[in-house]
Length: 150
Image (tube, rainbow, N blue to C red):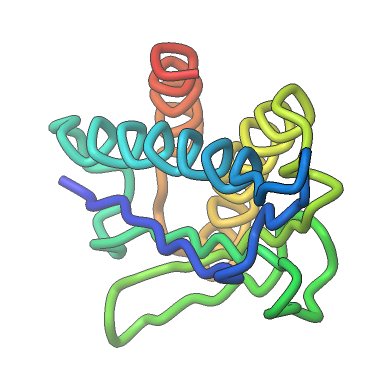
């Protein structure tokens, strides 16, 4: 059984807009809502009793969110794909900023699209390294789980 995990790195000042003289935390609440959805996807994928890849114990996605205080220089979308053979892990990152998280429809579409793309890139990397992976089954299960939570 493989483990799935994610990390959420972001600016502490997401959504500090002034609205009617008060600070609005709408952007922060929106990103937190989708962080929780991704957490549910990750937990459900980890519960599936199927070995997608015997050579890898963990599939990890790092979400890097730029805001007003902290800016990541990564391009928007999937990047920084790494295979850690000694740790039996593979990691990819997804980067985005306020032009994505300031609109719920845009954020939802972006996260779904890039979550699937990040896993496709990981599968391709494993295949390139000649590490057996049932990518078709992984993507099928991932799509079903995403549909359940998004």
